[in-house]
Structure formats: C-alpha cells, structure tokens
Image (cartoon, helix red, strand yellow):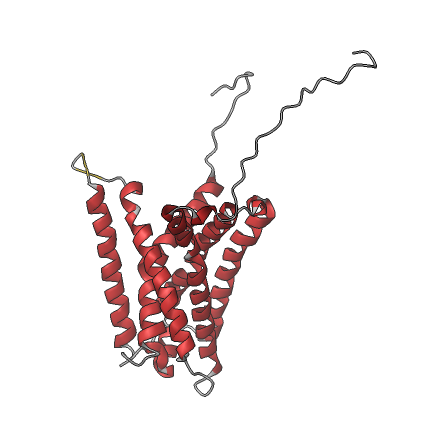
Length: 134
Length: 136
C-alpha cells in the first residue's frame, strides 16, 4: 500500500489494543458468570450456616486449594476480572471529570494494578498450599 | 502593522465542554450507567477479600477461622447486588456484540442473550454444587 507521499506503509495490527480489549471482555464475562455464586455461597449462605461450604472446613479447603485445576480456576476467577475493573474504574473517573485518568501514568496505575493483582494471585496460589495431584 | 495598531487576534479558541459533577444524577439512565461502571469496585474488594482468605489457609488449621461476622455478611450482600447488576447488564449486551450465523442465517439476538443467561445459570449451579458438596 502506498501512502500520500509515496512511502510504503505497512498495516500493523494493534496487538496492544487487541490484548487489553480481550482481557476487558473476558474479565467482564468471568465476573458476570462466576462471581455471583461465590459471593452468595461463600459470603452469605456459608457464614449464615444455611449450607455447608468447602472453605469453612480447613482440611477440605486445603485439599481443594492444592488441586492444580482449582488453582487455575481461582487464578482465572480472581485475576482476569481485574482487567475489566481497571478499565471501568478508569473511565468512571474520566466521566466524573477527572481528566488525569486519561493520562499514561493513570493507565499504568490501573492496568499495572491488574497485572500486579495477577502476579500476587499466582504467588498466593503457589505458596499457600503446595500443588497436589492426589 | 504599524506600531500604533492593535494586533489582530488570529488564534482560535478551543471549545471545552464542561459537565458539572452531578450530571449523572440528572437522568435515570445516567445514574444506572454510573452504577453499572461502579460495580467494578465492590466486586474487586470482594475478590481481594477472597484472595486474603485463601492466603490465610496457609497458616495452618489452628489459625484458620473463616469470616462469619454480620458485617461480613452485609458486605457480601451488598456486593451480591452489584454483582447481579453487572451480570444482568453485561450478559444482556451479548445480543449486540455477538453475531453468529447458523446455516447462513443470523441467530437472533434474543437467542444469544438467552444462551448467555443459560450459561450463567449452569455455571452457578455447578460451582454452587461443588462448593456445597465438598463442604459436607
């Protein structure tokens, strides 16, 4: 393709945009589909003793936390929605008149925060209970 | 231009629209839009609590006591309202965002939205059953 001044222009896919929008969308889906039941069961019904819940029995909870599939599930459940939250909260500030939320440092804080939560979640999941295939 | 003439103003002034802080309270649609965006905050707080709860399990059986206070239940109930609002508004958008064709015919947006709500129901039942089943 030739540009207006005769230089060859290459069409490069906006991979960074692709990544952040993908994470925003997936975070929204995971938050919508998975989080309500966790809050209902672990945050309300369990503490009120309406139903027995796995995280209220130490041995069962630790056994579950050692399972690699559970670790992977918890990583997705906890970390991915933060990429959605980061975008929403940043634009909420923009809508509320906080122009600084558009700046590059603000982007670094919000999206970097999501990356930091991901790293902390991986660290917690790998160090809290050892991996167990049993 | 001679020394006595006033300079001609050639610079254009940029129009900067401004909205007052209370713009989102003027209409119901604006208010619910802001609520939808705000749902991110309580959900983030609840997930961070959950992460702390997972970390606490590493301290051994003696030091582990899952939260059960009234304040925590109230906090969770408030978060659940925001979570449900996020789920309903986000999954309802699927009909606008997702375009699928089956046998060259576009699937209706209502069917796509229904499938998303169906997915939500199935996931909730399965996860709820696992959490409760392992608690017995």
